[in-house]
Image 1 (tube, one colour):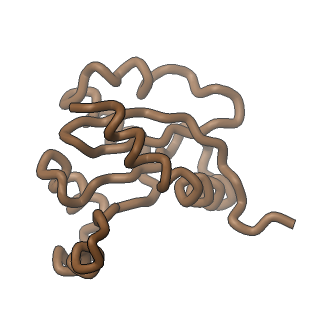
Image 2: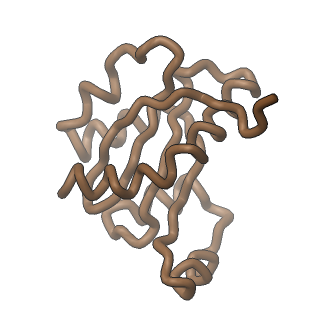
Image 3: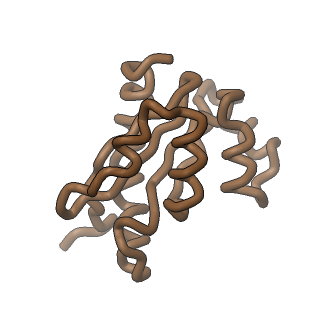
Length: 130
């Protein structure tokens, strides 16, 4: 499991996750109530998580990305409580980052890839800024 690999996976997802976090905050969720997630759909360690978070997306949906030579990525926001408890049990070394107090103005972003998970802190940023 490589934190470096997850970081390379995270960087192209960061801006989109910041926009998704902003949308969740605008809908009235507190920053502690949700997490932003980016999951490597082809990582067998996270297949069940992708299916649980995106039950209406058929497995065939991801093939179009594979056909273009891209890694399919499940991105979005999820309720924090259940996901944090689950990840604390399967990846206990990230528990402190999952359960610690959030830095001011930040949201947790969880990257699940390369057989493991990493936690980042991101700032919710509107998609369209004036």
